[in-house]
Length: 483
Image (cartoon, rainbow, N blue to C red; front, top):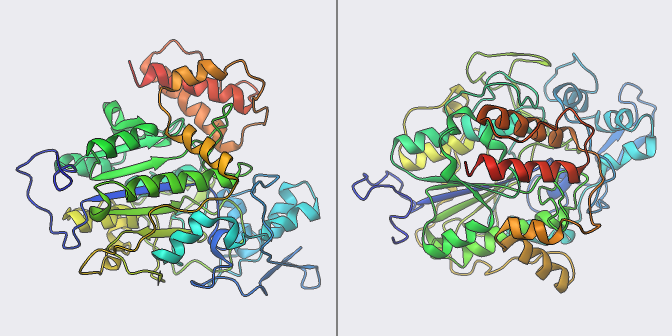
């Protein structure tokens, strides 16, 4: 199979209307960082002047000003709040005061509340990254197309925003809810219906597996090390979605960058995906999107745009939300040899722009929902008449050479079961409590086990540490995906 046909299931498939020569779209979606937090101090793009601030109490004009800084460390001490109610406070200063533009003035206040009144802890939400501390992501932003007006689809948590990438809706759900039946049509369905291929590569558990239409598609879900093998074999699908590792497990640390996980490990994953694609036969026919699901509670100074359409007429009750407002800006970079070097695209995008662009590139006319029907598409950036030849062959990453080699070997290595046996009794176990997102993943696994009638007992109701959750997830998926 050669690179021109590897994305299609049938040789007699009609050639798409795509004029940019893109045959493969890849999306790597990371976790919980705002645009300003990661890109605010880049000189290109709508970033920070250094004069932006929040008041300790946005309702008291005389309270202390907390300015932005480029002092963020790789590990943050706490997991900032980012449910629908808290994001409303972050954007508008209080609940029930929806104005446009949003003042974006309640981030410090919400973080102080989350830290049980600790003002100094609350101030840390204004800390952003110096670009040189995250060289992989920074290099991509400088070398390719930086999108500086990409907003999360919902001013809320992880699950609902990830669903907009897949389905342009969260089916009327406004929180991380593993019990809901997510039966909406997805871009995966559209690709399959039209004879195109897709795969999901995952670090420990694919959150997208909760989608009901994935029930009989186990062969599309692959451990991340198989991404390298598929590239080497010439078997890259038309659409690739990559999910990071969400839970620390011995030496296999989480790569999602979700606080309090180490941002450097996400840098390694970004570089791993880019480097593998850059060296493959698919580089000149691919578009890679590096994207974050939502802002994770971190400060951003840009107000979301005017209201957007409700995707499907559904509204949420708990917490209440009408799905007519976008969330906070998130980092997004478009990477391809067909884009010009060092561009900034200030078009307003949201996560539904991903399925909308896939439809535009491959000629699928029917929208999933009103949201992707109205979303701006980003294929206009594929404007070159010839592919670039000067794109970096490999991305720089933070850390000492020995650390870099170690983590890249772990990312690429296969046979997870042997690795688990090898390290099972070592003392390096994460005793950290689960974040609300990780807890929702455990609940998701319990539900999948129940639906599949596996013999793995449920764990979500018990007090959990990261280590316990990682073992449970591994044990469950081993049975669930290989049954």
